Length: 448
Image (cartoon, rainbow, N blue to C red; front, side):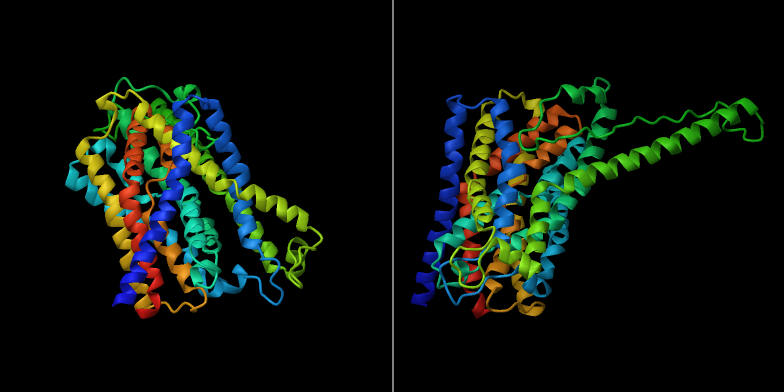
């Protein structure tokens, strides 16, 4: 019992250290924003660098990485583990489904206005899956000695598999939810702006390649003689036929445009980097050109190239957290009118649902699957189960703000930004407890 208590405290302090490290980097972003060192264009540039360069470099280098200077060792290969951890590719479906269910109950219990319910669903369903999980997993990994499993196996290897399918759900399902929500808001407000207003909106700082969604207002004019279908009117019939053909053509164009948009948003550089990393690892001669896998003394033909990519990837976590700090500072410094925000009751319910209920579901689900269904090899089970639970405990993704802005509703964007801000404001307490619990569960997994 004494040993278990000591281990629990060790895990708790390691978890607090992970959150504290992330918070320190975020505070640097708050300081930069408060002093006015970085403008909005500067923040957008940092977001572009993060999305297009540092995160892809981090994922690629983590997958291909092979520790040097350890002659006689071995290099981990995610492809060799694929048949054992394939569940990570479908885990996003379960995570998003749980979030939608939690969001549904949150809207009912908090009496969220109908026009904001789908925004709440998206806030509960789509958590931060890249920047913050990478930060937490990296810090947790570095907090444990190499003699332990969490210190020996890099959990970001498994996160890369999760990220292969999660963006498709986020931009596909999430985009549809937000888009339909915005359509409802537009139709309920006679003063709502047209879709052309999208061109004048500020580009979201977290998505430099934001594209406009096609919004079309369809109207079907019903003839005055609809109650007398036996009356034959050639001109009316001809008009209806032409209108129907035009609507079908327009519907097909809209469908193609939505598929193209979803594909472009899903197949982002981080996804390509993960896929390319898996390809390199799956071809042994190709991997040998990037990292020395024979005597581990850094003399592979393209070792210099890999070292450069690895160094660039190390900047991903600090940049992500500084961007988060700047966005958080900006959110709470905006003078938003109360009508632009979610109600206090709805905000509280979402924070509890996303930061308390979702972690409980993730931890309980993982424990159930481990005990009754899955048998992951002992060599990798700690890192595997850590990733399963980490993706449940993070706050709402900043990309939800991007999807809201794509919907063309600035008021909702301010409300969702403040909602995400509150989650991060409470993260030092709620996230620390969740991370400590997750690390403790993972560390005692052999006792289940």
